[in-house]
Image (tube, rainbow over all chains, first blue to last red; front, side, top):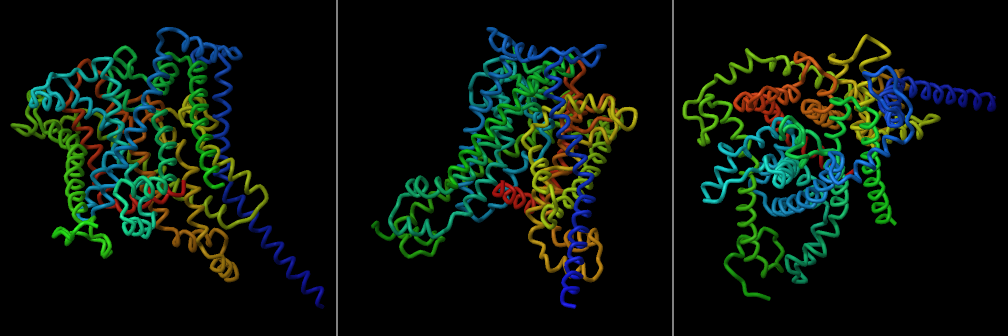
Length: 311
Length: 297
């Protein structure tokens, strides 16, 4: 009797457990197909394309081994090439954009954290650019940069300063595009920093105050170390987003070419033009694989930094 | 210790020990407000410029006045009746709604399974989903384009709503977010439902989903914003003007010889304004949602 009861209840559990397994797979069926076919398969497809002279308009797509990668290397070794400019500019965008954006965002977050009155209004205002369409706002900035009727030159004139060409001169074009990107993405970093600041226990500050620590010391020895997770998170996220820059450049440069004289072109823009304007899809795929490797590198650095902190 | 100053009264942290700080606090706050107000200006001036240009008659565009001397609705008239902008609007809306509904349903369902079910292969499948986050979408654009031109079902996906939307109908980040949230759904509640004969789908739909509405709401808002502003894939997936989304259409305005600034600014205003309203209404959820996912990430 006792035995029978046990078996009965265990078989009931078996069926329930099995039923749950079956349902789990039924629920996951469409997502599994989606990730396999729309995410994983194309990843391998991209690697495979990068090993072919892939032109969708040609009759054949011959296998060429690592020739496309060799071509990337050749282009990078040339004194001047669009591919080289694309990589150099992309690195400039990251190297300038990330620190400036994070520094400004941290300064704003520290000020916002200090005030109460109107702080919600400020937060909304800083955040608005982040949720607007990059294409739309990049065109607005392109107009603001115009020589005769653009706002920035109007302001320069009011201040009796010389007029600037901004987007039409190679030396000024990259910083001009960068200004838009920093401006647009800053609100996001502010929100993350504010959330990080709210996590720091108030008692730490009270203790520092009792000890008579200066504002700078409080920031240097309490705020900054405890804000480290937010800083690492933003460094990685913003680095990746600057590495993937595309829309602002296509919207702000003549015919979306990344000019003048390749001074603003990015890796993704170069990939787009090679793949969809010249139909060199094999070469373009090898460029995206290099981009993937760069992003993976950033992610691995983040993981090692984060895990070291936990240890 | 410094002496007690009258500006003491401005201090807001009741700690009795912060006597010396009080005078500084006041100054610090003042400069904070001053700087924040100045920065706020730089945040809204481009929007004001965009709006004001959209009301300028053509002859005023190249002049240096900030606000239109003779404001006109002619630009709006022109983009609504003489361009495909109303179609782009419709396309953006359809694509954003379709993918948001799909993401809300499938991300929540997959999140529910990963949070509440044990089954063989759970870990590898979850890792499979998450690794897709490591691959930048830029790498998939060319394969997606080839797949769209020659899909397993249907003649071509190029210039169709499905073709624009398919890369984003399920998202790994959303599944991860929903899994975190659904872990908070009590197992007792689900087991009680099972004893009452509620189906497994019923448990998801009538127990887990109602308890996770805040997270699903945040997911929907982000996803809608992301799809509304999406640019690079819609640019590749559409070739006919009737199928463009708003950002693609605005970008194509300039293809002609000269730049029709007034029309571009009108198109930009029309694409930005509805979003600004959404953001102002839902700002608390958006900001909290970003902070939440940001800290978890």
